[in-house]
Amino acid sequence: MQGSGPLNGVVPIGGAKNSALKLMAASLLAEGSTSLLNVPDIADVAIMGELLEAMGVQIERVGNRIDIDVPAELDPVAPYSLVERMRASIVVLGPLLARLGRARVAMPGGDDFGSRPIDMHLQGLEQLGATFSHEHGDITGKADRLVGAEVLLEFPSVGATENLMMAAVLARGTTIIENAAREPEITDLANFLSQMGATIDGLGTSRLTVEGVEVLRPTTYTVIPDRVEAATFLSAVAVCGGELLLKGARSDHMEMLIRKLQEMGMSLAAEPSGLRVEVRNRLRAVDISTLPYPGLATDYKPFLVTALCVAEGAGMVTENIFAGRFRYIDELVRMGAEIRAEGRHAVVRGVERLSGAPVRAHDIRAGAALVVAGLAAEGETIISDAHHVDRGYEDLAGKLSSVGALVTRT
Image 1 (cartoon, helix red, strand yellow):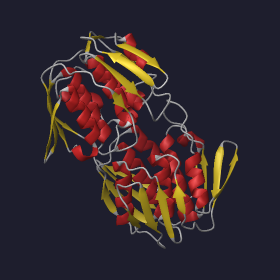
Image 2 (image 1 turned 180 degrees about the horizontal axis):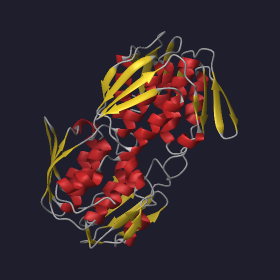
Image 3 (image 1 turned 60 degrees about the vertical axis):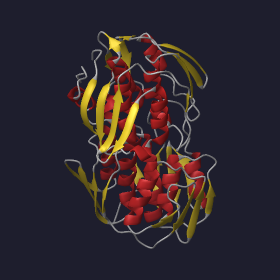
């Protein structure tokens, strides 16, 4: 890719990766055919489809629609060959235990930015009556019938909240999840489960109450737009300037991010069709700290760091979620960025322009952030291990090219 001038036009924002994967897992809870609309055509969705097919599910994709036919009998095994490719695979644990009373799931793999233990998933499910054993790298879970309980999460983990919610919908009695995650994707999953016949109260709050039911039914559901994809294009216009309409983007899912970008000097306005963004001058640096929703998402941070690299002044960046999520900084420094990192903190001092260089993507969001950095660089930037980007983005290069960026995928 080459450094690019102002971006102008309309970018369609696809369905949320972090929601679609969990809805696919939740489809295991009901026998029959469930259809999901607005599903992005990305590698992680394909992997989750392979995982469900390995259990006996039939998957068919037509455009942005996925039809999921769940049989009465399932093979409740998530093999290592698939789970190691995507950490989100662990969310099949709750649905399998709830519906079948047994599951064997390999320890998860996924992005390389520090330890993300699944202890909270297992501890919460144990409080609902499940028992677990570890052998040969697999977690084997059993439960004759899950029973509702009050579960207090020590941290508002998105994955643990999702697994517990999917387990609780078929448990006997009432489950209360305290300190639950509040992300829009949690609410999307709850709305999907409710449409299947579940009873869930407290959406958008840190206290979820789930009344167990005997059976759920398949349904047709539309996935929410991807707020992290929207953030990616917001950072692109932040470094290039111009005016974009992010079609379908929901500003109510990105309030803290929008506030920070406005503080930097970006003009943003919600419209019926999406979010309009305009940048005419060099942005100014701000301090940022990641926090659980509704705070600033850790997935946004690589894009904000990239924007700070070419902003006026210096900003302090603090990572409060994942300790190892600064590895891409070395790649930005190769491109001429002035960043000093220590522990959970980094100071970014803006430069006029980055310099194109060969760099490497370590994970999905870091890879996409390096694409954005390449747009703000003089000369050519070549990103290796770009398969990480394909896990979370449907034709990122094509969408950027359509609004004036000089980027190609090889």
